[in-house]
Structures are given as structure tokens and as C-alpha cells.
Length: 198
Image 1 (cartoon, rainbow, N blue to C red):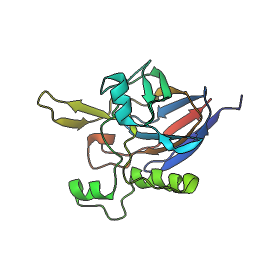
Image 2: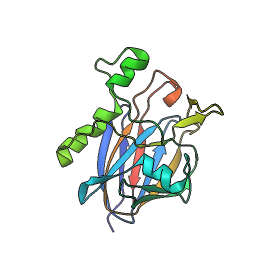
Image 3: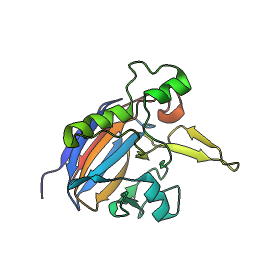
Image 4: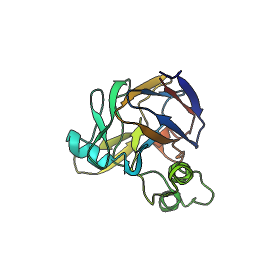
């Protein structure tokens, strides 16, 4: 078994890590209220990747927490949630991107965004680029209202709170500390997070 890997994902940036089946991924919200766009590919094939839609389908729920599984687009198990301090995450929203910043805030020019932060690694690792990515948005708090509308609220995560997932296959992670500071998504202030692989 390899020695644990510990790294910091700086605010508004991304990182990529190889994780082998059975290893644990611990994601720590260092300062609280910071969303992590969590995405991954099967190490053997870029054609198989984390699917928020399939995860909703297989769990028959818009919410996941301890004991629930994150699935791939091929309906295979990718991760199991082992521990979860916060128990409030999002499977609905795509990665933020320049067009989103233009649509909502009119400030897309040179704005750091999760789609590009993750795609930078996909291009480097697999020579591919995805036009849209729907990640597992860890710590993101999306209220689903009775009329079907949704509201993005401040994350409930406090400094030092974490989620731990077990890899159910060999994966290549590509994750980002969300770049949205214009709304309550990250409590209005983007901060770094810690990732530990063990």
C-alpha cells in the first residue's frame, strides 16, 4: 500500500490525482462553505466517467450521503461514501464556465472556472475536452422548493469538516475548488480545500 498523499487545492484552481481501487479519498473544507467540483474517469478508459445523472437514477434520490454510491455513465460503481460530516451535496449543477458567468453576472472575461480547470487535466491526460461536465458538487447546498424551483444557498460545511469516499475502481480524479464568489455558492468567498489519499 502506498504512503498517503496530501495536497492543497488552492482557491479557484484544480488538481488531478490517480486513485486505486480500495483507496480512500478524504476531502476537507479547510475554512468552511467551499464547494468542490468532484469528477473522475476510469483509469483504463476515458469513455467511462462519473455521472451525476446515473447516480441520481441508481440511488433514486437527488441527495447522497453515507453508504450511497457514486456511479459512472456505464452504471458501474465508482465511489462509496464512507463518512460525511455535512450530508448536503449537489448532483444537479454543471461546472461553472465562462458562459455561466456571462449569463448571471456579465463578467465572463478571464474568470477562473471549474470547467476549464478540470478540462486542462483531461486534455493533458486523455487528449479530450468535455463541453459540459456535471460533477458531484461536494458541500454545495441546493434547496429544492415545493414548486420545483431551486435555490443555491450557503454551504453548511464548517472549517475542518470532511467527506470520505472509497474508490470502487481505479480512477483518475480531476477536481476543482469552485470559483464562484458572486453568490452564496461558496459563501461569497472562494477558499482552498485539502485532499488526502490513503
